[in-house]
Length: 343
Image (cartoon, rainbow, N blue to C red):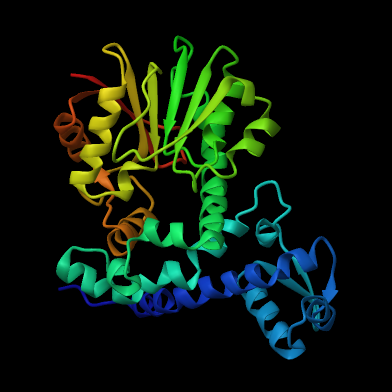
């Protein structure tokens, strides 16, 4: 066996402290530190005065952000955001503030401390910890649900700009985005394809903010918002159905149920486009390492999973589809489009 190098120990120690660095970002976002700094150089005491926080503790937080490359201490006690840190501002066009806030929230990270239990049982630790599943918990906590929707919107925004030219929608008449959240993806697709009509299908909670977003995009007149439960049925009428970031949230049986409900809604010549990360058969570096951590996140929180191409083909087959093509989006995106046709 090859002896470990000194840097190997350092790498493990760095990983152990990684969750603390994540919580540093989360605290900064929840407190509004980046928004307070804006594009100014500010003294830590001034930042604290604006936020109503302890001056010394605020300086220490700012120094930690500077140590992580998110801020710079331009003079002793005076800080400014770096370009990376500016992404934590809520008014930045490429903001990740909502994403950081959601994925460092104590509810979201709570199940991670019980990951060993999930590995033992194969079940989501979240359910035991909170007495309901993740989506049931969101339904009972509207503020957290809004935070989740905002995080998903930020996660989808950049991908939507790539997808609008990658889905082969020129010949389609209408598209239903199943579990499409607040309509971020569908709005981008309808904007790029003026001939298309759309249906956004979501739970009432998930679609709560869709109206203003679709209005702002100028596509509300071509998009119907339908609420319901995709574990029960999916509205018919479109020749293309999308499932982006949905299938991974569910175990195989419920994922197959969702796919079967889509199959029942599609015409014989219709298409299903599943938009997900497709994992390699072996860990070969073809997807970012964080995807494997994301897979464990699915395990601990929602009993879902990331899947390989073979697993998607099997799942589609159970639901009456055949996979016609799997194509990865342009580098550096790890996401693939799985095109499935009625079998």
